[in-house]
Length: 523
Image (tube, rainbow, N blue to C red; front, side, top):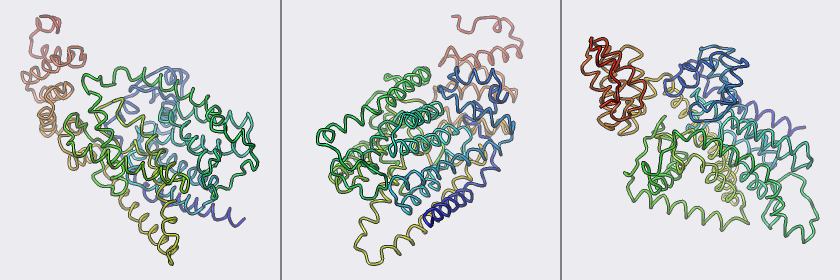
């Protein structure tokens, strides 16, 4: 009974500190970066939960993704709140809190370690790298899919405790719901195998599982012991099938958004992936210069960074593998981190980002487990270990709360968001472009033109920047200059329909009716 009371107190504490850190998101606006595609400019979402909308959610690959449950959640929000951003933000926060509590309960159930589990959950709740997933309405797919991720693991633990068809099917159901929220769950079968090793102890290959409170089979005959690994893999076959189908659907949805190997060769992708793995670790340990978009370096990464990242990853891997039997949580936490980042590490490049804070939402759980379980073990012989750990934990959580509170403020509106991006990154033409869009919405055309021009200075072949700069110039009455930029946008991308339309409208305003009727792409 006392243990249950402690779990309730910890759950209340986690809820309160998360609310305190993120409460201000309710006063934030929608931002122009993807919120337009998902909500403010999406007629399907704004129509609420309708039959046509539900059909569209399950058949559309809008914004290069198939995630029907994410669309349904946005429709539900619009049904309740219309375009009042307060409700949309609050539901993101509720899902984040729910995932935090589920993470705590799942870890505690698997390991029996209440305080370590609560600290992992607190790190997940408060780390500044997770601000983007919570404070950005368009990142609903992250918090929603992670909610189903936690439910999948919880259902799996129930199945392990008492195997049965109904419990097994429940695991598959939650996995399917998660995949329909975001395909990030394609790595779930591998994660479940890691959990089989530790803390569930189902492999029984001599690792220490003394901190697991689950009932495991006490007597296993020699033959079954030899083949138990294959049995556990065979048990996951339906999960792998679900993951494979989701991967194929996602690849099909992203055909038009995936960078070709001619544009971005494999060697540049691998280099960026190695540096990103190391950079995420660095930002976890010292969360500074976090922003909405880190531009891809393409071929400009210094070789010392690539080599250094490779050496770091190899050294950590070597150390955790050496300790696999004595400290199985090390290899599980490390492989969790490496494996769950694979879908978003950039080997299949979608978009223009080198990395993204939101990509760490689930992967960092592995590192948090590794650190939280390793710390007390390394301090086992310290005389005042409990006092040191308690004080250190309090200081760290306080620092993370303050850092996240500050980071949340940058998401208040588009102007603050992209100004901050320009403050902490260099050559960020995407940030200049979107800041120009935000300034245009406020009627600050001179400032917008400055940022569009800077985006084009960094990337002269940016067709959308040429088009939007043309719009701003046309609104100022500088029609000849506007036509120049519309024409350049069409030279870069002859199929750019918006630029074609804008060019024809501008030519019509100038009275050049023959040019208006002439096909844009004709010689």
